[in-house]
Amino acid sequence: MASTKTNIFLTGATGYISASVLSRLLAHPKVANFEITTLVRSPEKAKVLKDKFGVNVVVGTHAEHEKLTQLAERADVVISVTDSDDLAAINALMQGLKNKFEKTGVKGSFIHTSGTGFLTDDARGMYATDKVYHDSRPEEIESLPDTAFHRNVDLAIVGADREGYLCAYIVSPPLIFGAPSGPIFDAGLANRHSIQIPLLIKTSLARGQAGMVGEGKSIWNHAHVNDVADFYIVLLDAVLADADKVPHGREGFYILENGEHTWYEIGKALAQVFAELGLQKSDEPTPFTAEDIDKYIGNAMIAHLALGSNARGRGEQARALGWKPKYDKADLLASIKPEVEAILRK
Image 1 (spheres, rainbow, N blue to C red):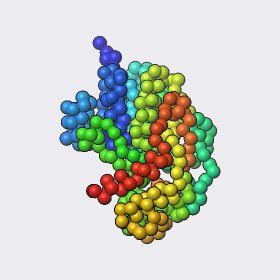
Image 2: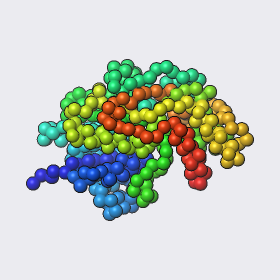
Image 3: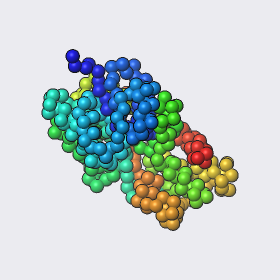
Image 4: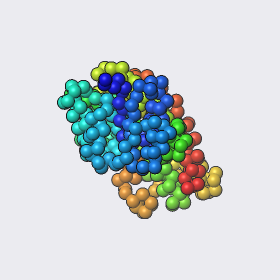
């Protein structure tokens, strides 16, 4: 008899987002109906995930494309939560879903993690843009250049959806902040830190003063990691109920956000923490010099993109599915001190 369980392939289990999503899958009221498979590099972590949490674990990397294709072919739902820009890995996953469709006629669901990096400009902290993108308006997303960050992968996924062998949903988080929660973290298996704010903190610590790119005028959205992970479950539930009814393909972008901040506001909060901890006298941030960026970040393009650009979006589609984020800008600013303290402890 064929299995009646829903086969879910989660492409990672120990990352900041992936472990948050896995924790929620394990707590799902229908978890008994799920067959969860994940791919991890570490045999030691794989053993704990299998023995303690009952997850099917395959040891490997995303460079093993044949393995990715095989795992995706067995899945009803693939949730891609690792490298947003690894086109070869994404193509391997989609090939698996294509193979499944060609053999069975059953269309799989592909939930891919992109990011609002595709909305970025080259402001370098010197101005705020008035341009705001709405995920409920496909024509706005399609107005972005094909060369935008993440765009080559996102377009390949939309193209696969158009071919008709999968339903694609592209989740686009902004700056993610906060301490993640769940049993995977409690077991010490997962990364507890995001990218942008830790980068800003580490660069500022290295130069001895809280900093920012340019004047910090640029604007980004933010979302707490727990709110982000909650959305994957909201989306999964909707997809399992009726995948075709959930906006997908060119209409299937889901910007996750619960407010906006300027980079000056982040730099100011960081400077206040540094002053409080005796790391600097002033409670004001100062602009990073080109030498700072070269010495402590090593890549000006990444510094300008991650810490100095504008990326403004509105997550109307996520809310329409029932997503209700809880954490706002006050929580973002309050998260900076514990993040600094955690980095200092290391």
